[in-house]
Amino acid sequence: MRIKVQEIKYFFLFAGGLVCGFHALMTLLLLLPPNPFSQQFKGVTGAYVKSFFAQDWRLFAPEPPTKNFYLWHRCRTQEGWSGWQDMGEQLRRQMTGNPFSYRPKLYLFYGSMAGNLTLAPDKRNPRLVRLADKFVSVACVSQFGPSVLAAQIRSVWRPIPSYESRFQEAAPESTHVVEYPVFAVK
Image (cartoon, rainbow, N blue to C red; front, side, top):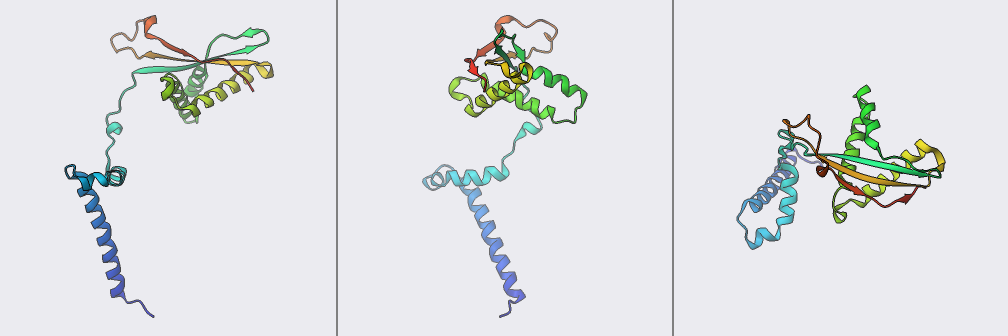
């Protein structure tokens, strides 16, 4: 049995018509005023239209950051507690040497992790909290060796000063600190 060119044309015309009809129906259901039929398919139409045609204007006008986030940690050995150390300070120093390394992405991840830890407890991502514990454990063991007994995390955020006040010292009450319980380093 041989397929004719005419049959292939009709097949593609039919398939193209189905795709165009589906697209027109989804767009129409999304744009119609609320009614029982469009409300019933609201999830499907939103998922279809917004996944392909939604505009994210942050590419052209990004929302500027309003806070600086820091993730501090301290380690406990048999001699006692170390001082609070900023995990991002070493990354910031290493980034200035080679801007094409992986460190800028790691620093962005560090900032999002520190920002997540400043949220209210019910809004925090538990996987990021566990990951922060692992980061701190690795940092403590690499700094003090296997004699580390415990560690503690402190998440700090400060508002970014306005342009006019950029050379003034930030007020102490503008610094927000969230301390986490001490955890054993494994």
